[in-house]
Image (cartoon, rainbow, N blue to C red; front, side):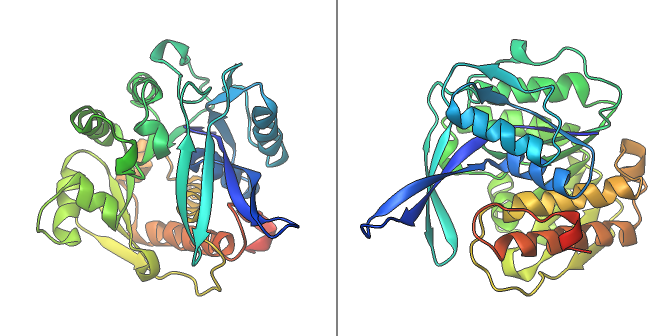
Length: 310
């Protein structure tokens, strides 16, 4: 099973009301939550480790997980409030304002994390704002430290500078997690933030691989995605042509497609990723692009079910 570790929250998306003014409608979301939902819909064995509130929004999130076949035995519940992300869309692109103080997800601490994980959990996925917001960022870093040595690990930092209060602490924690990861997926903007300087992306990727990952995946928006292996080989896929409604959840769904394909191919293990053939990596990137295209073709983070991409 793939255990997704990170935030689940409510996207409050602006929609016009009967009076003509905009109101906000609650949609289940969060980067790691979206990836877990997408994996469940693709038929991959998946669970979510996150902090969920017992409030009405936490109940909405729990119901959405159940409906998409995401296992929830590692959800940590509390009576703290749910994180809210107020989303405004302009030309299909989202901007966010977060209400995240003292929430069920953010306030997770290392001592809240499980000391043992079942052997059936063969892979861990980390990402999103949970890697930047403390104290939960330290809790997820500790979870990786405790349980990542014998499991495949994928990391998508999805860097949002506005969440980073102490850049030195964040960089130190992120670099440690990158060194423990087998797959690191970054956008071109993420990579330029992680490795600042005048070098091209192709010059920066080897530096990231030297830190420890077996695979680095770089997404470049409309230019598609490229996967790089530690031995220097690389492969690329274009984006799927589609009428874009909005981009909410696109990268999260892409990650699910990659993980699902690697799981299905039997390569989502540490040894399997070290010996990953370029053709298998390309097939994983292609599935990621295909499922992301479905997500951006409809409103909100609404990943496809397996029968929709057959």
